[in-house]
Image (cartoon, rainbow, N blue to C red; front, side, top):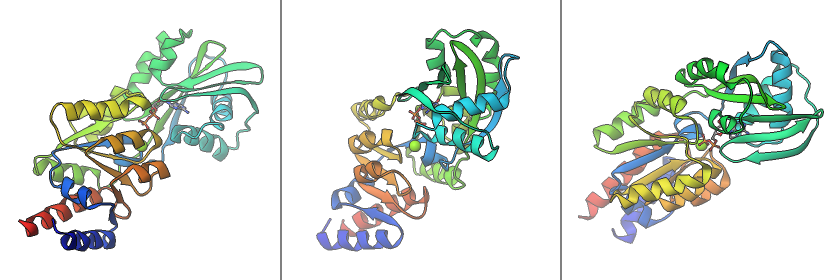
Length: 294
Ligand code: ADP
Ligand code: MG
């Protein structure tokens, strides 16, 4: 491509809210055959909220569970943590100070609250802790996940006490964008740290048939590398802290403009205004530019 045609396309992209950082990115976009999407904040709106609170034992009530969970999650920056904190706040439930808080990336959090040991996290992580009371909850956890909700489990002193279901809506444009990519023969894959059942339910709503779930934060980039090793030319679309290495490691990184700074810095293209429609705009821009040149 000539410098002029790339400058023109870059300017047109900027006006459409698609920031192309280099000529190389514009040339690469046309050659992409596989696009990997992060789930939360990329395929979904990224504003998860609490939908259900289940009391597992007959001890305690919803308020107690939400209050303890919000006390711990107040120290976490995870979007799920923010949903828990907001749910407690909007219901006027008091929170307590915490000691020895620890975040376990891709798994959950733990801390001491009012002298009690609290663990919060996903099913696989909580299973690894050998908690009492897990057997009874299996059916209800599965049901939440099948509805596309993320089950967040809370244990107190080694015993499962509550399950908080958290849901996030898919972006209104997601199914349309996925369908358009499918029509172009582009393979679409979801990549997420969330559990398989929840991820598959969201994927179904989005029209995505390929899901890579339960991926630890450090392993997203490895998943991208593996696809590249299969000979695929891969773009990654993401917004979060865990996505930054994968955005950098893909042949083409596309960051959501609503994402965090390190993701935006790691992207070759930044989608500023049109949400996921920006992915289609970027591909079209690239195609038109490369066609003019040949
Ligand atoms: P994603 O790929 O959706 O950004 P993460 O890798 O950050 O997800 O986390 C994966 C899973 O770990 C979450 O879906 C959740 O079940 C669990 N998890 C991580 N951090 C927390 C937290 N602070 N509170 C509750 N659960 C958490
Ligand atoms: Mg995300």
